[in-house]
Image (cartoon, rainbow, N blue to C red):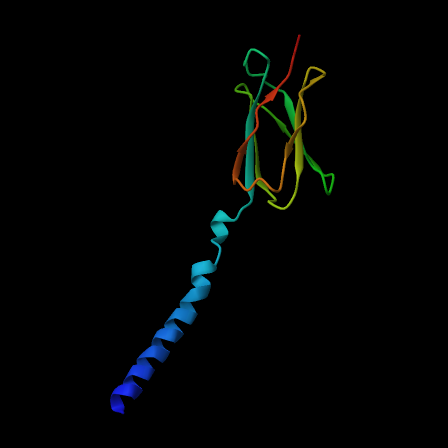
Length: 121
């Protein structure tokens, strides 16, 4: 009888430990849950960077727009994008516009790279 009680007590203790640890197994790390990152390069058809091009990012639901002026390397970066929104991104350089690209909420990658090309001729 004492063996059965000890065995039951051990099973209850194990159950308590497992049930206490379960939320920790499924909890999200807040540091890594900072949204998506969109990066890319603005270049001409010959793959040369277009310094001072302006990249526009538009949230298709809220219609809010962010902009980024690229440096000498042509690189742009939009951090902390909502994973539950669609975005459109395009670039302007000297009055010329790149194609508009879409970032879908169904694309689950945390880092997206979209290069934008502008025909400057």
